[in-house]
Amino acid sequence: MDSTILWGFTILFFVGLFLMPTLLTFYYPRIRAYTSPWVCRHDPHDFNYYGFYKWQINYKNIVASYYCKLPKNIFRRVWLKVTLLMSIMIYLPLFVSFSASIAYMISIGYLYLSVIWAMIILWILSYYSADLLDRAYKKCQEEKNKTQK
Figure 1 (tube, rainbow, N blue to C red):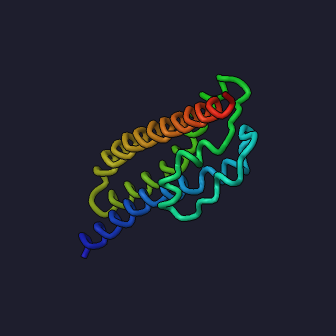
Figure 2 (figure 1 turned 120 degrees about the horizontal axis):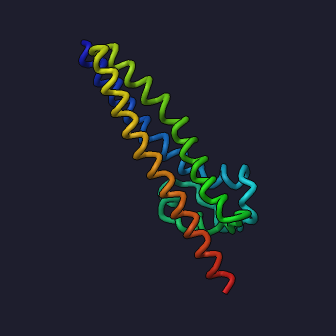
Figure 3 (figure 1 turned 60 degrees about the vertical axis):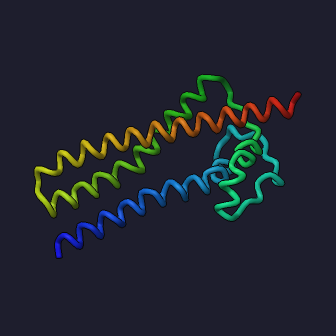
């Protein structure tokens, strides 16, 4: 019975782990359009994608539909650092609670290994999200330069 509960928690955790970034990525351009002071202008005709598969196919168009302007180049790095901090704030409680629940069910000694495993995966996810944002920013700037020529 304990093994079944452990597998259930593990499956739910990984489903949530992969579902949350997908949903955040799906809604991220819309959230960013309304909250970021760095998005200057947005063409509404380029952002009428409501289905996930349409959104996935037209990801480049969605990113390029924002005409981004950052105050200075140094702010781009600050933006990525904020993204890293946000991802740490989102993922760290998930990993710690998951590790603590497994450690409670298996053994206390497993807690230390789980936290180390969680921090490694958290670092990979943070780096990956920052890399994605950097590439999205570069695509946005390239599209902006193409339209201005």
